[in-house]
Image (cartoon, rainbow, N blue to C red; front, side, top):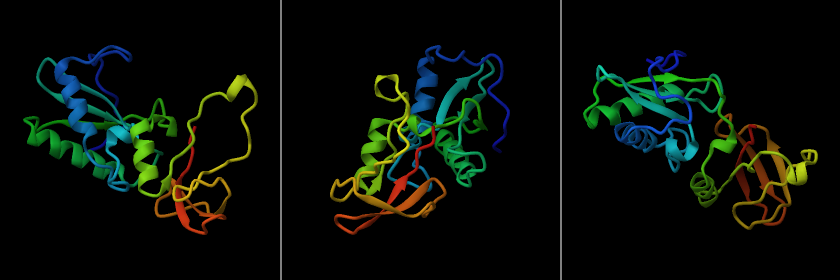
Amino acid sequence: MVTDTPLVPDAAAPGEAPTPLEAELLRLAGSVPDPELPQLSLADLGVVRAAHQHPDGRVEIALTPTYTGCPAVETMAEDIRRVLAEHGHPDAAVHTVLSPPWTTDDITAEGRRKLAESGIAPPRPGGPAPGGGPVPLTLAVRCPNCGSTETELLSRFSSTACKALRRCVSCREPFDHFKELL
């Protein structure tokens, strides 16, 4: 079951290096394909936040959904539990962790590459504007087919709530754009 309960207090502190076993648990949980974007692993998407094995042997994984109410989070949790059970951890628990919230900055460079290769325009990396100035209000979305930035929004929602449907003005091909969430 997925809950909002955080990892229990004896879990490693944020920023603390995981033990070799916890690193392996993170690798296993992160290897699970995203149910809505199977070309990405959960590690590529940046939603697996932590793994912890307690002194009594219990294993817990912290999973942050891409947005509150994400319909795929239960499937992600079930798939993580299945993979961990296949590797000797049949009672692993998966907890949703909503803070800090997931942002598109959590998508790895490899994840962005995989999105583009599959015809989905990846979100722009966030962070402060160059030179510390204001954040630009225009959104130049590069076509994953021809590379043009001359694109138009067709629909704010596409096959999933986290994507928008766009069309390239240059090559006229429609494509999904993974929306920025900062």
